[in-house]
Amino acid sequence: MLELPKSTEFNRRIPKQKFYENLTITPALKKQFADGVKTIYWRNKIAATTMNLAPGKAVTEIEVFEIRLNTREPDEAVLRQIDREIPYHILFLLEYDKQYQAWIGYKEAATGTAAFKVSGYYHTDWVDEEELPLRVDGLNMDAVYENFVRQLAGEALQSGGAEESLQDAVRRSERRAQLEKQIAALQGKIRKEKQLNKQMEMNGELKRLRRELGEI
Image (tube, rainbow, N blue to C red; front, side):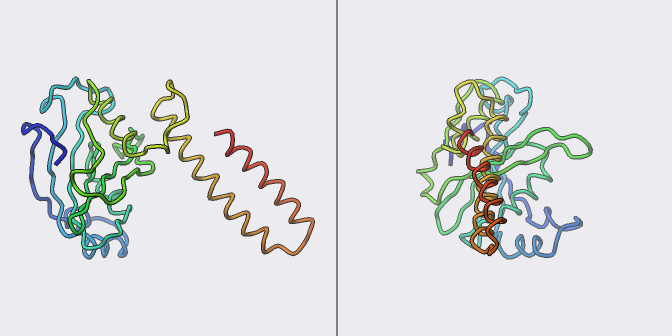
């Protein structure tokens, strides 16, 4: 599918129940697995042992999961649950009606009992399989993973300068999204507020948020 070497092929079907049976998850998430997911395939394992790549410091393997859906609207919570249960980095290929989306989460080492914590996800639009904009780029596993993230994130992780690390780019992207959400909520409050002094106070905060957003 991604023109990966045959040495990476795994092609094992994983029962979707594995990700919600005997686990404490919400009824809504369990229903999304049951109703929204048709099948899950573990297609490839990208690693130093399966490709001509050097090991990474943070990334040891990238698993390629193909998830066939019953609905055109993917649920990020489903991907997040799978990411929690698999102790490796994952590239998701979602299929619906012969169209594909590629998804990847920024996954980094966590403290405590969890192996990883997952920040936001980046993904493509629905496209034909051959139009997926993905390529293995890099000499080691860390670089390959970073380039997958940057390929799927596109403009969301740009404009930070050539020397900006992936971690810093993700943090900046998350802060931008947070500010945009705060600005939209504050604008709604200002429209509803009747008292002039409160409107002026909120407009001051709105200007501050917009200024910070412009500096990111």
